[in-house]
Length: 254
Image (cartoon, rainbow, N blue to C red):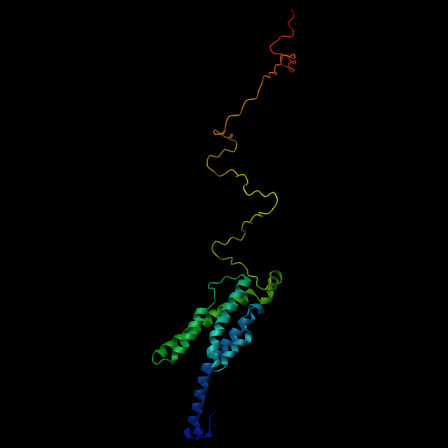
């Protein structure tokens, strides 16, 4: 990398300073990238394989020149979807639908603004700040997954409900952990309009109060008490039914 002519031109001391400065510059650039890739790789290992949109080794593709300019956008997208899927699988609360996606996306966009004269300096500084914030947020998600446990600990959910099983969001406002079961409309003998239960909590309610009559109900027809047999002049009248003497006192004698 350093030709003998350069070393001879600057001399021994000057050449050593140049080499030392170049090494410092490379360290400043590559050490944060290497540490970030290690963190992303460990984060992907905490996620179940069926929830990973990127393998743990995919973070090291950022070291490929030119290719990393495109891969950084894809990696931000894959990390957001992978973390969100694993959080839903474990039932952990999530403050955003796609974790750290917006910050990572703007960090990548502002990275290219460095090509613009004058304005590019401000864009490059903003990109560095957003990348640091993005790093901190991903480290927080990684720490929470570590506290929750390895992904193998939740393998019983995948075996019982399939790989697409998602825990309910217990922290969602209005979530009811014991929802009322829907009735089976096709069940034989099911009554969709059961009799209404009295409101025991209504003020002044008396459970022993007699039921009010229905004033709109037509009056009932009284039953017939006297029975009158049909008359036929050719045949004698039949005897009266038992208990009805037709007004004749049988105990009276002439």
